[in-house]
Image (tube, rainbow, N blue to C red; front, side, top):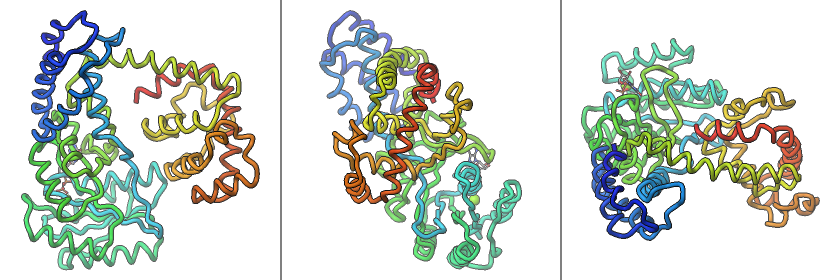
Length: 440
Ligand code: GDP
Ligand code: MG
């Protein structure tokens, strides 16, 4: 892996107080090779190396890390950043149903992902999805989706293979409206290669179905090819996100980085197996580690980082103890939590959390968090630090500014007070819970 590669280079700069340009150059050669080996597109690599070099030169050497480790840290941070953002959110239509259209080449995993996504929507978000069999070409494609539906005990809409996919999509959406489904997931046909006919069909479906999301499903094992595919689909179909499948295989996952860089569309989910529960939210940081092929090196770097986190945790604990927790802290907590994935699961992992009154009926969903963030962002710095001053007039202004209601603002202020109380109870377990949760 990259770590071994860098060892030799690092020997040379051991003991230096600053990382020189020549040092960085030598290390960047190794990083470049590692990225190319992980199948990252060469143009992407070039841009990336340039950016990292700029950041890495002249850095002060941290006490706890060698210069080489520090460069890797920069590399990993930048990689994470490149793939970062709010990935795993699924669009919600203003008027249901939300329509999600799957697209991609044959064998990429569209049908499987359609099932996995429906499963996730129901299990995690308690939504009612309708699966739609719009691949009328591949033999047994309809049957495949129906089998998945049966297995998950979810309804599949099909009209056989004599009706056009456009009509199938249309009818399915009508049905979904009548029967109050939340989501319509359209499984479409693929081809072995990109061709005009396929693109035309997908465009036709798009026109009729007006999907809220168009996901491109790509096989991570196909490496560089996946990038070309992604570019073509994005150009002609304007995809909204990518699902990267078969990451349980022995790929480094460089395609993730390239696809993101080339299409500028987020990777929403990754497929980690053939089973229906093997769909995960995309974690940029994990992918960065995977691309770099880092083992021990990463552990070391993480240890160095943990100490920083610990300092932060201590600071937070102090604030809690003195009841001086404010909305800036709250906002930071929210964004940290969001980075870690589903909130309810995180909370469940905090030791002792289940013993705290009110913990079980904490309703947490992404949409809610967005609104909460909007409310906090509409507060003045002073209001964030001293919520007590938020009187009726201020509440009205905040509600207006954040596009929410006074009731919601009231609720947040109340919840904030409760959270303060709860955090006091938990402050004793904060340290442990934090370490465990943040490793996700
Ligand atoms: P489609 O042609 O795009 O609809 O692809 P399918 O959904 O039929 O999937 C093609 C094959 O890939 C099937 O054998 C799936 O079980 C398999 N597959 C799909 N996603 C994954 C994944 O994340 N991991 C693994 N190991 N196999 C997958
Ligand atoms: Mg299929």
